[in-house]
Amino acid sequence: MKRYALLSGLFFFISCIQTAFGQSEESIHIAVASNFTPVMKELAFEFEKSTGIKVKASYGSSGKFVAQIAHGAPFQAFFSADQAKPKALEHQKLALPETRFTYAIGALVLWSTKQTDQDNLIAQLKNESYRNIAFANPKLAPYGAAALDVFRNLKLPTPERYKWLQGENIAQTYQFISTGNADLGFIALSQLKQQVSQPKGVTWEIPKHLYSPIKQDAVLLKRGQTSQATKDFLMFIHSKTSQEIIKSFGYDIP
Image 1 (cartoon, helix red, strand yellow):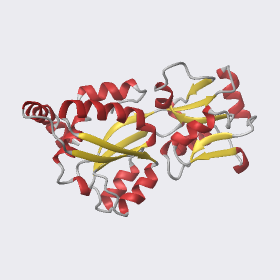
Image 2: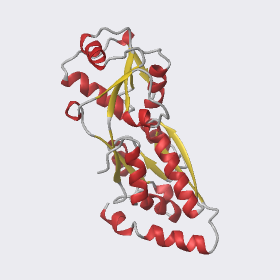
Image 3: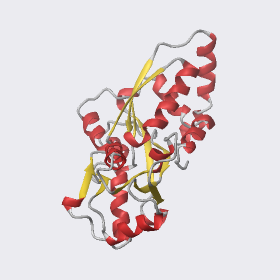
């Protein structure tokens, strides 16, 4: 982490060289947790604009990406929705040591398009007076695990299986709620921040003490160890420009 912080200034030097001698045609391929989709699209746009290096990003479940990387998927860097999965890749020697860092800290929100009052929304959760509730698979998605923390800390029983609409990832969970298929559900605050207009319904931003911090780590993968462009992109994430973009989508910065 310290090494990346020290080297982050090199990105701007590299950018100047590339601007002076023509833009690079190099590209990189990264795996990104689905909750970070809109942020990464903006970050990739800014990076490509500055360097000419194209960022190809695949979005999905962090848990599934780990399995794909273990089976040889051609990703050069991994932006996870948690810390555990990049650490696991380090232990498997599929990620380079001393390159892992926390790039964002997520926030959890309870959302319903069928309620118009926050007090009613909270009461509906606590009284289990809902037909069904959506949250991501806690075995694969950190935001799903955080939702289970909320149930435990509020001393509420985990929803019965017939009431639980389980999303494969946080993006699918959002769809369950936005279409009205779920009465309410847990999503990332960032998913609401990306909306141009005020989201329909009502939200409750879950107090931070009700769930473990959702620290999201990135790491350079073994396939990216010879790619200077990938290393430059990871250094770019430390820049002030990147951090302002990340915060604008409702994330905290470590």
